[in-house]
Image 1 (cartoon, rainbow, N blue to C red):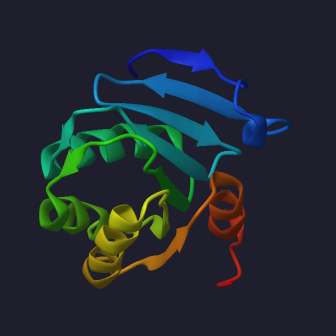
Image 2 (tube, rainbow, N blue to C red):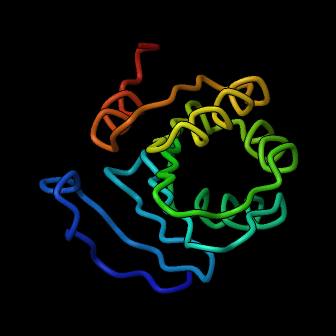
Length: 139
């Protein structure tokens, strides 16, 4: 994978097993072997092909089911239909959480909720999103 390094500089990652994967379009944190925290970089456009490539790489590293937490702190564009077609096609992906900081981001997340065929939820902070995504009993 591209740029594997140990990671622990975010307070909500303290005490967790975490690996950071730096890619041109995003920082991806593999957490505790089943959580994927995605921080897309400012100004990028996320396409279905990018998501397919990233998920293919992630699924080589992760041994079982996993959840995505998408942190929307940066401004970027995303081809929503393409993106969710790719995410929906992932059998091992069980949950998608979006962390929204602005009203517009919350509105877009409402559209995403309709496109996503996985368990989906929107949060205002990363810690709550990670806690929800980590639950494996359907909560």
